[in-house]
Length: 73
Image (cartoon, rainbow, N blue to C red):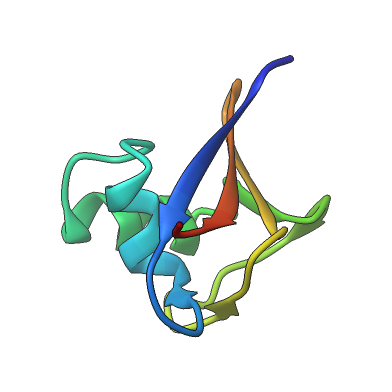
């Protein structure tokens, strides 16, 4: 399975924001729902917290799509 690198500026990003930035979901409401339903994994572990802080190298998986937090620049 291919993992897309998604550049993020600054010190990191919240999981809910990253799901939208990586085009894994279309809206904040959808992010909230898929997290509540337990459909998201971070680094291979189930995660349900929208505010989970992600840093460069973290891998987020939703369904068959995966995205890695990359550093900008």
